[in-house]
Length: 417
Image 1 (cartoon, rainbow, N blue to C red):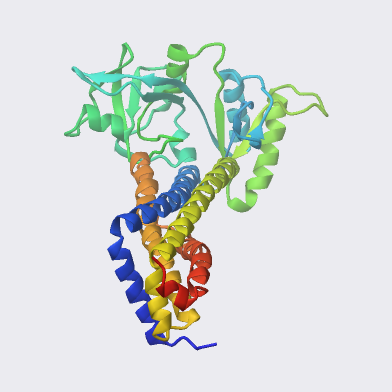
Image 2 (image 1 turned 45 degrees about the vertical axis):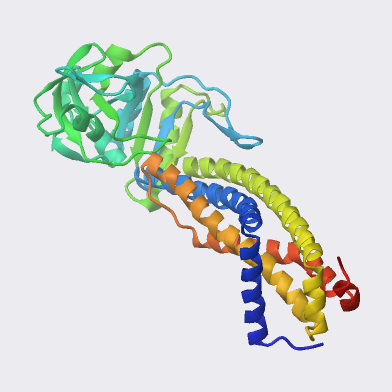
């Protein structure tokens, strides 16, 4: 068997480019089919990486030593994956406050809060926010347990908490909308229909489609409770362990105290949930992975269709160029050289389509990052995978047509009409 030298390989690539230029529209359409499949593959994998990074960033902002005690019944399930928990009774404010007091006697820092209202409009002197602001009722320890910092003013004092005063702390997005030139502290805003004096503005913490820490208004715990609470209200207790090493012991102690507050008998099942931030993010990421698997399967099916289309086009090309093949063989071209030429054409089309698909996939995935205000992602591993898949599609689809071209009898090929 003749050995293929580097000049022969480059000559095959040059002729492949010339052949594709002669049938430019056909080559573009074929590459576009492959590009669509690669776009689906890279786009979904990039989007998943964006969402995973956003979820991890949002939950890690709580800190490695913070966990929450809250009502169960949350469902994170996509298909047959994920977590589904049975409903549990709400945690009323009196139980939450008693738990906090008991934990503080043990030297543990904790806070009580509740997302008391969503889709709320906030206004100041005719300027309004979009009706998508969350209202959170919280105590004065909330910034500590949630890693929340203030850009202006202060958080609530103990007196404002105890007397349920009409004061508010604005998230940075809300303050920026109502007070674009700054100076929100000391002004009065209306949350819904009620006026509140602004005592502080939080520093930017970032937001995503899953959580928002900036599009929010904070009210003192009892202020929010009196204004918004109903029979369905359930409060969340955030507890901070002294150190990462003491986290498990702190969770065990908090469980014992909460069982006592709930008056559960020995042996009875817990009717509340303890959640670590990393476990919640892991559940969400696990569900995202199942979506990615389904999307990757769809992308591979699209690539299978592209492979069949490429093979069909290469077979047509062999038929159309029978006389050319016969002439080349009559002039001494070996079967191996003919195979190399047609394989090169198929691989060039696939690689061009793959590169275009990678670019479009990154645009789709990072378009989601822009919409979520998350960090852009350029997953090198998925880009390399897409390029390898593109080359494999070209080789697999072009092999049979190339072998067919190499097997033509030169005499019969020269007589072909």
